[in-house]
Length: 363
Ligand code: PMV
Image 1 (cartoon, rainbow, N blue to C red):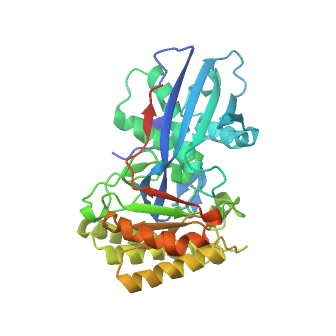
Image 2: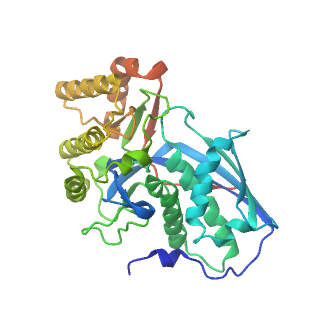
Image 3: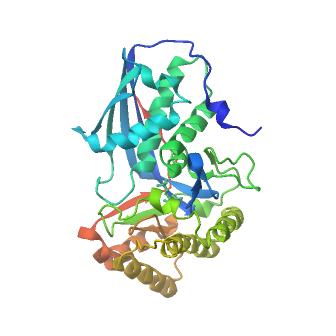
C-alpha cells in the first residue's frame, strides 16, 4: 500500500514527558542519479539514487524540556559549542513544515547541539547529514511519547521529515544504497521518503570508495533552493526528468551485473547533466571552478592510461567526489596524492566510502 502524507500524522500521544535528550549521528550521501528540480512540499521531479557515506557525518544532541507558552517554537542552536543564530531561520522553517507531523514541537524548548566530522567551511553541504540527524532526534522524542513505533516506520518517518528540511537529506537515514522518488521498476519507491535499494547489488560495489577533493571551500554562490527553482520553465527540464527515470533503470542492471564501465559512464554523465542544467537555466550559473575541470581531465587521462574504473561525480558545487572500487584503493590514492591534491584548496581532501546509515549515540 502506498504511504501518503496523512500516514505520518500521529494520533494523540499516549504518554507525557517533562524533559530528556537524544543524540544521533547521520551521514552525508552522494547521488549517482541526481535530484535537481522539485514540486511543492519538497516533492522531487525525478527519482534519484545515492551512496550513503561513512565518515562525513553530523552528530546532533537534542535536549528538550516542557515549556508553558505554546504560541511559538522555542529553540537554541550550537555548532561545536558556539551559539549559531544564523542557523535559526532554516530550523524555524523546518519546524513550520513538520509541525503537522510532530504536534509536540510547540510543547518543548529545544537545545540543538551539533558538530560535523568534516570542516564547517569545506564546501561539503552539511544540510543532508544535519537535517537527517535532527529528524532522527525528533523521532526519538516521538517514539518516547507514543505507544509503539516499528523500526521500519521510525526510519520512514525520519526520512519523510528530513526531506522536508532538505530534499536529499531523506537519503541519509539508512544505507548503503538509497532510492528516493517514485520509479515504476522499484516497488515501494516513494516521493515522500527514501528507501533502501531493494535489488541485488554486485560485490564490485562493496566498500566503494569516495575521496572528496575540496576544490573550493567557500559558500556556494547559488543555493540549491534557487537552483531547484530554476528548473521551473527550464527549456530542457522535462527531457531531463525523463532521462533520470531511464538512467535509474540502467543502474538497476549495473548494480546487478557489476558492469563498472557502464557505471563510470552513467555516473559522470549524471554529474555533467546536473551542471548543464545550471548552465542552461535563466539566469544561468556555473558552480565548477577551473580546478574542477583540471581534475576531471586528469581523471580521464589516468583512466585511459591505466584502464582504472575511477570516475568522478559532482554535487551542487566545485568539489569533486572521486569514486572507485575498493580493489583500486592503493593505486588511486597514490594517483590522487601525486596528481590531484595540487588542485585542492590547501591540499585538503577527505577519504570516505559507502556506509550503512545513521546511528543513535547512547551518552
Ligand atoms: O537537498 P538539496 O535541496 O540541497 O539538493 C541537493 C541536490 C544535489 O546534491 C545537487 C543532487 C542530489 O541528488 O543530491
